[in-house]
Length: 414
Image (cartoon, rainbow, N blue to C red; front, side, top):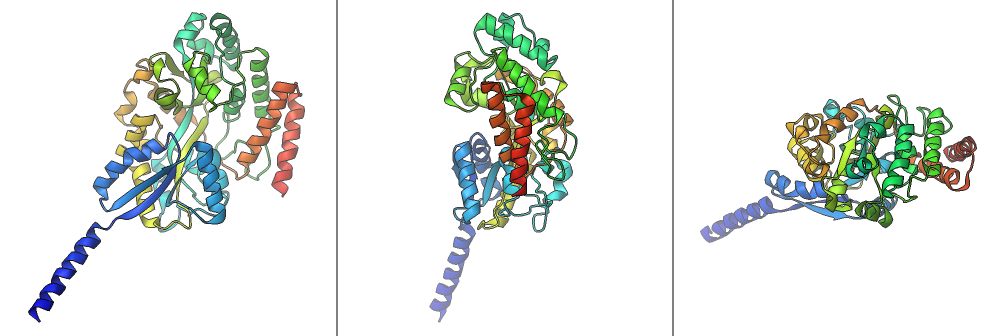
């Protein structure tokens, strides 16, 4: 009897020990360069939650979002934590396949005041459901090659004084160096339509879902892009293409307007050998715009929702983790506490010792809280197709925008 008791006690101890060491696996689906933030978080999170294993799957940016679109539609192959880029958050928020993180048991909106004011609305559906918690934001910036513009006798002030001055400077840079001022004239349009917005206004749609693409904001954006193309200062190179990355490496692109996170991309893979040659400036004409940003979401059919939410909080609301991501990939943090850390004053070696993070914070403070719409990706596709007709075929700007408006309105009515 005593032997049985001893064996039972030993078995109970062994089972308890085994349970204590059992690993809960949380799957995370992400994309470069955001996946590097998850990789940086894993060993730090392990110290806090030793019994949780984070399993990261990363696909190229378009492949990841295509895979997640399919997964949400079919309910299969869903991760516990889903990374979502700004360009897709509106579509995913309206899909009905994501948890509302604003409600119990998550109650993420209690942290709203801790995050950049414009970031939370970006992750919110038209019905008010919080589909994703922002982890980083994209204050728009103008990155430029200091050596190339100086060779052309152009100053930073010439680049930023106005959009017209930027185009004129591009002519001088092209003549003096052979480099294109920018990869594609489309980039000017993409930044300009994101600037000058009011709180609560969308890029493509108003609060009632009506398309805005015939407004003066779009007319001006198209005209500026056309002026750059006519001036011959853009390389007609699409962003994220092999030709685009080669353009940076071979001194063929003198500037690029994008989110502050581009500094990390330039340093890490686009142009690592050009350390010290690039600088960051505010956008031309006093414009402030949000260019992208990233979110973490939980699918409704995720297996480990409780643990997924715990990891998302670690990624988004933990100051040290946000600073780590800021340090590793220049992902400008959505967390205000991280934005106000002394790290923001440190020089950036890649940008020639420039304290550019101060500049990005100034831009972030000026950006309005814009709304997202599930049809944003479609509107963007339609608008870009019409802009291409303006640039390549000489189509009239206002006619192109009227046609875009009509196409988008038809999609809204479906």
